[in-house]
Image 1 (cartoon, one colour):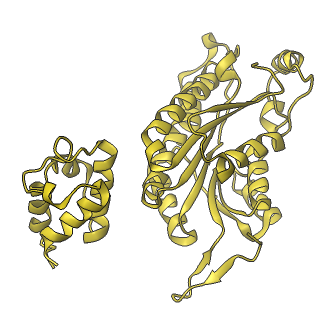
Image 2 (spheres, one colour; image 1 turned 90 degrees about the vertical axis):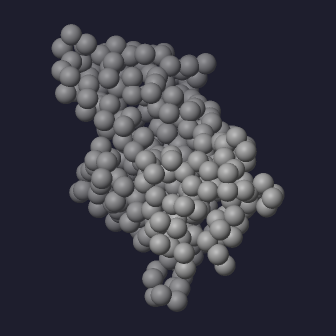
Image 3 (cartoon, rainbow over the protein chains, first blue to last red; image 1 turned 60 degrees about the horizontal axis):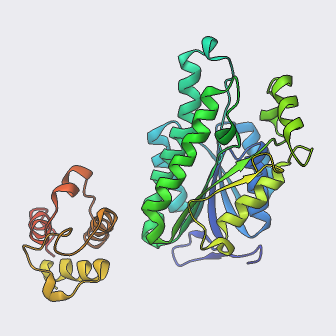
Length: 256
Length: 79
């Protein structure tokens, strides 16, 4: 589809005819890269994030096919309300990318419960709330693709990250179970497990963890956000229409 | 079209069953072969057709064709 696939309908409401995907954590890092890739591949993107300024910057860069939605995905009511508004204002949602994630690293002895709770709420509960909010619409249209951004640490473990790694492993359970609930309804649910990717988030990791991972990558280099975006685009598009419930590592060979 | 006919039509459409199977006593799961997600879609179909929201507690009670008709009739939607 081309860039001008917008049309006016009888009500005068502007309807975007491109296929619509919702991306969480869209303002920066991998989420921004995913949004950019999707926009350039003919999708429209409803980008959600709590980082308002970064979201507006992203919106300026990505143009009309990207709409910014300031949303805290840990807020159950806000998620429901925003999902309803996205569907009303932009139309049916065919893709959902649960990318938003945070870290609060520390050895378990020093990890406060609030840091455990916060990471679980954002990374795992947030994804659950988003899946639930958009399930109804996808069931109605009998079509949809959900991609959850997990991590290779879900498979490998990582010292100092018991909270983060638990959520990334949890996302694999969410992915596999939801794929089974929805498989017969033409709604696919898959996960991408990024390896060591150059983003704002990984730059915050300790030097020790960074060196540890980089040295273990068989391809001997860190990945770029665009590598993840390519995998997400593949799983959202119809080219992957017979793939559901899988975990796709994009990690330079780290887990293989 | 009567309420019964509309309900029956939705059930036939969603579950792919024969009209004669859709009796008042028919249980969605055991008699009409609906799994839990089929039943959710049925409720969604009734909501769309009759323009109402059925909350989860109520939805789980609507296990037979007769109970659905009774429920919708009580909502005074028979128009």
